[in-house]
Length: 298
Ligand SMILES: [Zn+2]
Image (cartoon, rainbow, N blue to C red; front, side, top):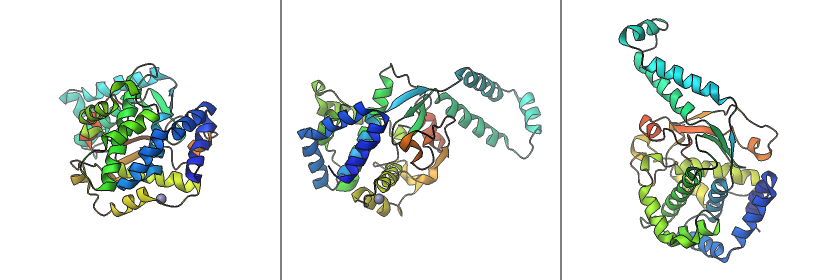
């Protein structure tokens, strides 16, 4: 096993030894080897794909403490947003320098963050907040969609083709247990990609950047995904990227907040750069589409 793959496995094992066993099974699957070979041939980066798969396949949900307080804050924000003209102007007198638009923006943003924060959604490689439940289907569905969308865009980015590699995507998601083989996986991939809201996609460049951080922690050299990350830098224009089919995205559009509950003793989670909690596009159009969903759009 390559150094990078051994590193990914070791991080999974630190969280849960069963995850490492499941990883071994997925990696040992002939379908995985064939799909990774095909991805490389197309101009993609097999290690980047494995990193994305590992990040979305093996995660846990942990409820945040004191959710009652969250509900109180939401009620308070809603009351402020509903303030009538008279009371809104009284409130504004408290801070004349703040325009009513800036105040509304802050309250909308704060409400989105709170709505999306019921539990910590975390794995060895990233951490965010979500309002999903571990029992419902939505959490798995979110992870399937984000993982699929990232892999699809990466393969098209690397290959320069517009056509989707449906078969490769179906095979690799099935081998990693993100998709049931009984469901006509290729058709599922096609339908799911059509259904994903373009505004809710996770920016590819951010994922490249995180991959770069992880492979550096593994002590391995830059690969194809890092190359794509670097050459795409110059043409990352936030105003254009929202409509870009690949949606590369840009760090500039992101705000980064620390999660309230960080476990510094938790292995690799603190080995990563600042906690990847609630990374969310600042762009209101994107943010509003994500209301009630996972704040990281993943
Ligand atoms: Zn790199």
